[in-house]
Length: 93
Image (cartoon, rainbow, N blue to C red; front, side, top):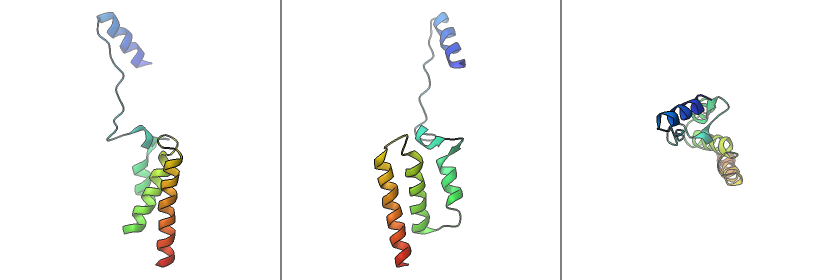
């Protein structure tokens, strides 16, 4: 609502305020939902994991987190790919 008030005030003064674009580097909208950022959830979920295992788990979370806001089924397939690699690694290991 404040943004609308600013825009109306700007029109009255002869200037307009454009809504700010999302910060696609530091806080992209497909990673910031539900009151927590994906990177914080990954940090918590991978605490104590190292190397390849931590990498795979982080990517699985990342792709599951954003699938409904970015690439849909493609992100689900990427999460599955990392999960399959992690499973294979654990069986070999």
